[in-house]
Image 1 (tube, helix red, strand yellow):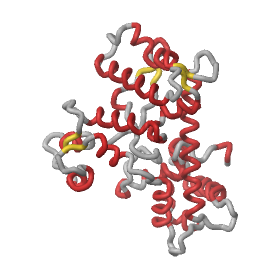
Image 2 (image 1 turned 135 degrees about the vertical axis):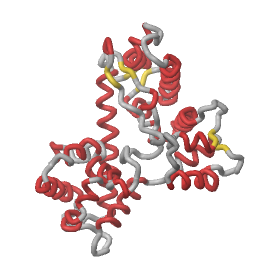
Image 3 (image 1 turned 30 degrees about the vertical axis):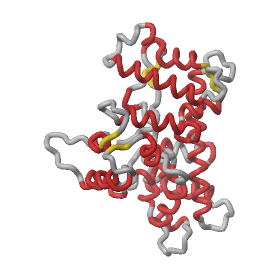
Image 4 (image 1 turned 90 degrees about the horizontal axis):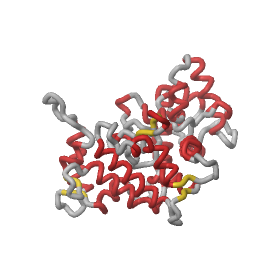
Length: 314
């Protein structure tokens, strides 16, 4: 799928970390879920918005009674004024809180991997040697796609420099957060756009045509016909994405597409979940309503966003 989040770093030989090219993608919006927001696919996006990504995996393994018990505990935490209802404001705050928590936990996890000298900072050399050290020593001869790994190294260095605002080649925790989650920082916008264009622009002309745009999302196999959503995306490309109607997306148009101003995805998800579960249409949710629509919540961002429900918080 389009614009995957910056991938996890996988442990390989000699303690180095290798990063597959397809995983080195910047997410184009706040990371509520890795799934497409498609209700026809079982509300998996919503599941990950409500529960948190890691917690949702656990939630899926529970019995129906255990699921209901856990949901009741979640709802009690969301209902901060303890009036027995979950309001839009409370739901919005919860999703934003869990989104921030996911980012913090992700940074903490990687921080300990890279801060080798334990000085509370991560230098470019520490990051580079931990991620690519083994391969650097072998000049990338041990990997199948040598050029791709060299490209990833250059990309990481460019992103690190952009995040390193004081230019000392050493990242503070804030700077390292910007490195791992550039989509969350205004000063990283150019990096997000450059990497996105680089990922999709297969012919290297510095812009994205409609075939590249669609090809990044859908590749026909064995004469497979295009699904309806592909036609919709083609229409979006021509009517909305390609602002100057020259048949391409340039950097500014890509920015307008993947960084569309002050879009609050947590707010949109809160509204969506209320719409899906508010049976009496009073604009707020009860535990009973949520239990009646537990399939929506079971597959929701509230329960699955980065461990939105922490075991020690229940």
